[in-house]
Length: 580
Image (cartoon, rainbow, N blue to C red; front, top):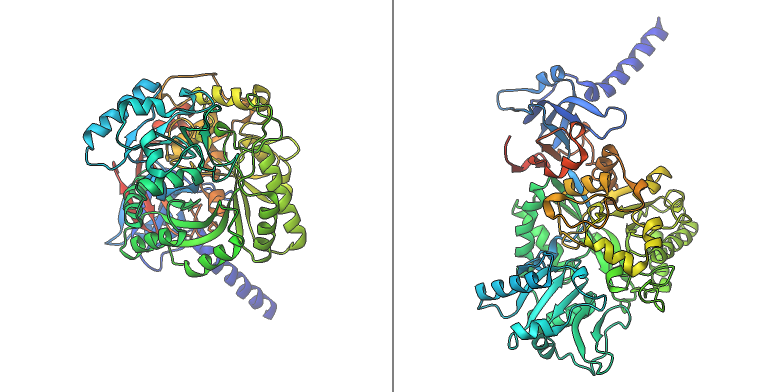
């Protein structure tokens, strides 16, 4: 009898532990109950549900419609999904909200030089009081691989400075007046030769008007019209609600490059204190200057100072290399169009090896811009050494972009527990692909380009982030755009019809819808260090939710990007609502 009583007590305790997950009667009524839709939890044990309840900031119930009834009180808002899809909020694992300041001016995302210049003229005519004629989004494939020149701009604007930022934010097109005001001429040394520089006329050494990489860009910008913290924060505040409208509830800020990191973080916290921050932010210390000798100390200080509910510093962002369009991606093979070059490191392996080692010793995450195959290999090498030295460290490591990846390095993402972070919407067969093949070679593209599926098949972790405003063809922050391209490696028809190939090679690198959703939710939450709080629908997790007007499992992949976000909720608060 005593034994039976003992087992009854144990059984009761077990049931008490399990009941909240299986639909026990509510001890308090919910603020929201969502029913009658396609609810996809991203929880492998229970991937689907009939209802979700939200109480305060947290998810209080996930289960059957009948079980949710006990959570409904007089004040509960019951939302009939009418077959729409409910998911965890999208988590952006690599984006630049503060670079909204660069995405201003004339929209230059068009397909000819003539139209690009026409848009600049229209913007200048409408903004006659502007000190600098601005624009964003010109596309590399409109110009030779030596870049655009100041001559076209000088003919239109001989007396006013012009600074037009490229679609990837990694270079700018300027006129003679801008160079003059910035004090840049044939005698001016490049800030980082081979990495960040002013393209030159080979005969005269005069700058041609193409300014490559952010260090050189900032040399121009700070002399023309340096963005104030107030202007940057205002542009950021204006952009964040647009992220929420796209279904984004959390984001990794991969670098506040337009002003000191601390000022940008204070801007986020000002919005948080005012109740106007619709997206939770996990940020980084952005290290792109090799003269900064101890970036880990900087990152640790920021991690200690910024740790509020919605704004936290998580990692050290390391700028290892650049991109292929500027020949600054660090490659294993020489560039096809420049056989004497394989790209130059922005931060040398010696420096970032030491930084990764110190980060590992201090439990600090790292997040590296490693674009070329050699850059990614060097970063993996640094992590391997750090993990041998400090195998019990809590550090998480993320290789961002990973545009080119060899067979030898695919399994290392699993062996070393490194997350592959990438921007799936870039892998579209638009005219940018033709330029990439000319620069790095068709053989490299056909075997190494954007190998998402290879990493997943090997057992690795994949996380998505658009890198907005940076892009190759269209600057989009919409997760649904990225998900469609991840599944199809085909062009997004709503953004244009120019097409180089039917599908981006290697064709076997497409992934499934479920894999793409996981990459945009729980596995991106892992990058932010928040997978225990967000990224899936589970009792006790924070109520970050997105509702889409169609069940993505029931529509063709080619239609995913045209679906609409009807509702976004972050921390139990509706941050976007349209159509529900």
